[in-house]
Image (cartoon, rainbow, N blue to C red; front, side, top):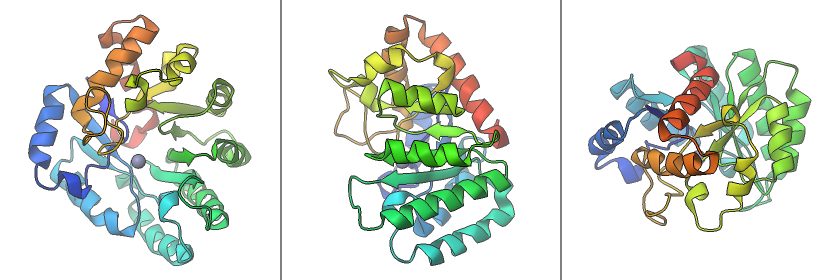
Length: 257
Ligand SMILES: [Zn+2]
């Protein structure tokens, strides 16, 4: 049994065939799927999906850094009202910093990241972190906020071995997805040095499909393709990969296991 710790299943790319997407993922042994939020507009579609599939699809609450603009204060105030039902969320995510697409709102991104980490701490929830060309700043903020209780996943990890170790020392897991299956992926050499107990599997569906589906729509059913490569790197059986990464994910998402 596998767990997909990161899939945007409420995305409009899945509206037409969500039932068959979930059936396919079930056939591949992927029965638990955690859904990171993006902004206010994605919250209701995500919660509707979670209600329709209460044993398979689990929602997170959070404002994605790419959606942080100058109205961030208003958006966060609005989002915060959902914390009345904090228990229905498995994490605060995805939150973090993204310097790749747009650096206009970096100060707002940092403010939003810190505030949402506080939400996580106040409600004893893990965080799911999105970082792009901002790993050092993310690590700095996490280190500042870490007083022993903060846990979570650094999703789609793309940093150096040293950064990986810093994050693990800070109590974080690394989310590993389709990139691991790409030819010449430098990530393979880093992951070789990381203990399996510090890793979780993810797709980031509909993005970042693994080989041989690269460039097409990604879906949770492709998790075993990532696990197969991880099994090769670790020289372990795919069953052992499934078992340990699921134990890890269930430990992180305590609300939903
Ligand atoms: Zn994502």
